[in-house]
Image (cartoon, rainbow, N blue to C red; front, side, top):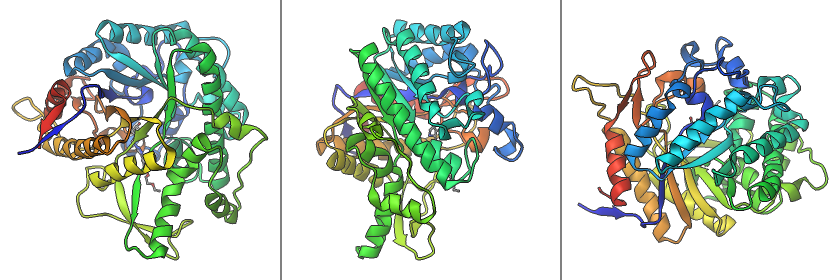
Length: 448
Ligand code: JJW
């Protein structure tokens, strides 16, 4: 038996997002977001599921904070529902919505848990979608005013902030692949959205320096690892193109003030052009304090002539998959962290999401025996520990997710929680993985 040991100062956390857990979609003055509209349109989400009630965390946040407290984590990463605090998208704050987050933050702090706020976790106010959503450059200013209002309201108590969660999902998956809200299938729309998300990020960072001078801010891109099938240059380049889509497209502008030319050219071949204004890249490349990495999966990439825009075919490393069908590749997590450090230097990294979908239910003994999730976490935390030992500056690890929740287009069938949720009664049941994580957090180590 070997032991995996973590530094004492590594911070541990658990994460959720507003639309996935809050429910109370029509309560407290909240207005609809693009996800309310998308989920209520038949055919978009499995089983016709939607976030109207979700985990009912809006009403049960005190219980949820107790689960966090008993878990022993340092951090709780949650997101703010923009349309709950600003039902018109901009303008007048909804006091009731602001009060909900204030109570949540107070509850966390009283229990010794540090809040980490994500400003944008995909739930754009629908009213802003009606004027073009993220395709409209004006939305970046709407985001800025929302961000400023939140910095002013909570910046005194909350010192860790993330602007945008998984910008690849919010742009390409949502506007080109059509899988997430608003469900468009236009590459030009997706390219515009990706630029505007980054611009909105940059604008918020600028203003954060003024409004929360003692705080730390960053964003949370998702990265799926791809590695070449053979050392053949064709496979190597195919993987580079595939990786570029999630990695360089969303990181080069922030860390280097450029977009990757190769990708601009590929998009242009599809008649999608990157439209920018003078000075945009200066705003986007504002220095940030931390980068959040969301890692779930990795694959082998192989050159394929008719393999889509990037001429790459993704092949699973082996046949191990989670219940959402994503290949398991823990080695890719280590390689991702090493690679990001080598490419972008010494930016402080938080793993803002990592976790696994397994759909175990509550058994007759009243427990949830999710051994597979524990194995997934062990493998990925082993990679994390190796990356730390190799000198990658990693400050925190935040598991996705505290609770089973509304898994977007997959609905409630796909469970990522370390706590089981019964979506009829909202009853929470701590899974075996909860107890395993608790012990790991407590001891800063686990046994393989
Ligand atoms: C890709 C589907 C091909 C969330 C994807 C679908 C294939 C046409 C999990 N991270 O719930 C990526 N998540 O809210 C944020 N991350 O393609 C948090 N990425 O389409 C978690 C889904 C995802 C995806 C889901």
